[in-house]
Length: 248
Ligand code: 13P
Image (tube, rainbow, N blue to C red):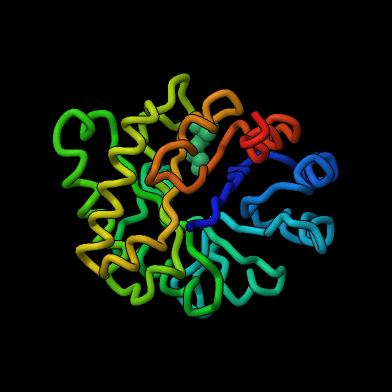
């Protein structure tokens, strides 16, 4: 069975002091959790959070990684730099990176490859806009996936996050049926590109307006193996309730 993976994406929130408070409050609240727990923090907070979570069941993640080993690439951060902080996961291709910073699927695929090459698990995000939702959502998701995964040989080294753009940072998440339908479709695409076994092991998360009231419903669906959480991970109590969703 696939182990659930619950990831908090801090986006561009928290300074050092706020980060320390959040993590110190979170650690005891989630110590008995049975899922993998990851916090993807802004780069300048890696050195703050790393020592705090050492020896706990919380793992460190980042929010992007360069596609190059090193070079004259102002503003980019390499996988080697992330490894210095014991980063184990990195989000690539978040819809905010695509929408605001113009990142394209081929480049996102190169970022994912670079992560895998360095032993870091990329969390590859895919999702459709509302306009696409009403048009050709599935074929659009398939194109995104195949482009991003083009050079990924071992899909078990990747986590996929389905984040419909229309559900992120909004008031309403996708319904559990909508999320399940797309996550199951993503698994089909993985089966076609790789094989049945690969499709069985790859972990697929849902993200978009997840909170402690709706998360258990998503987790009850067959194809959903975890969540990528934005706003609700910024409060330790709320995030811990999501992580401990089985206690509900
Ligand atoms: P919200 O949970 O705030 O909707 O954000 C989701 C997200 O973008 C996580 O990466």
